[in-house]
Image 1: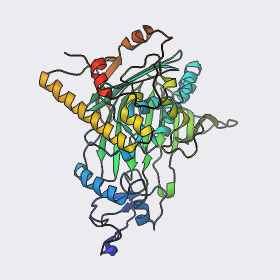
Image 2: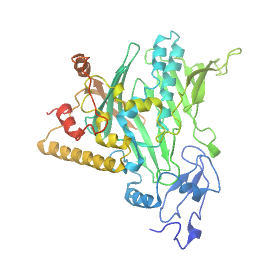
Image 3: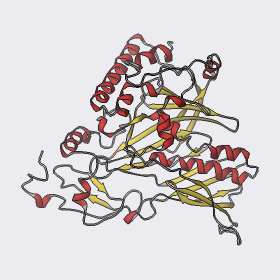
Image 4: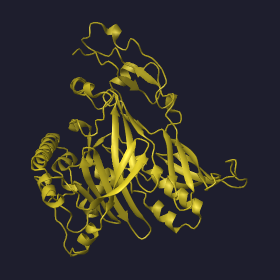
Length: 447
């Protein structure tokens, strides 16, 4: 395939640079249909420059030859759900699994504690919905977490917190967290739609009654990868009928409205009680309002959440909290052998060994495929150990979601462990040669 340096017809390169409206609203698009055979690909510059299309397309973490190879592999999947059907290069990964990413959503769990302590029902909704907004700060990172192996788990101290990968096709996870102030149960299934240089992510989630907006990852191959999450987020209190509706603004030209969130807390009669405003990557504030949604005279905006300081120049843009998710200091006694921290590919990437990361990832994926073939041959089915499938089906904007519930066996397991026993992991060697083998032993049951 030709490159920008040797293309004899350079006039064709970005010959049709166009501006238009994105599916979000009025984000600036750069048509690159003439880009060396990459038909149908767009580069979306969130900063909205008009004369930098070619320069913008060459930015990002990909070398030209990597883009060529990746595009040849991926173009046949345009329009498809690629959540778990494509083997991706390790260059785009971060040293974290999807289960750890889900655990990262609990960074600002203090907001849920405050919601429980608060007697004002509308302020409870402010705290709870602000927590739901805060999770998007973690989603703005453009590195991809590893897909968990079937049966993989992640445990964390501080609160009782367990996450379990319960299905690979379709990709599903279940989680449970609790402390003295709240109990949190979640079943999550992702759907995606690959669009060439971007992918739409549709979160099918049951966590309280919370409907999050979809997310779009832009410039996967060409340009600087960035994330936007336009649309409504709705959280409902099923006891009182109160609800919060927050609108995540789409990114406009020159970055206008990027990250901005606005909305109201409504009572059961759908009358506004508190307005909320801010940016999902920075802070959220609130202010009491009248029935027209206007702030009461004499009141002022009060900040309810502000993002914590982050490490400077971190390669993966991890927060301090995210780094702790890979630490054994946050692990419980006798950590399950199926824990994400023990994955050899994740471990190798954290140590910066890309070759070992790639080989370990391929080995795990191949062993998972072999185990699946073995189960199918024997007519056996994988059953999660820590969560049970219920008869409940929850509708979401993108399809029905089967619900799993925490069965309490993990609590019994932890209660049986001697608190004085700690799992020791040597710093100089990979902690696990075969995570998948241990998953088979500990996590699967036959029926």
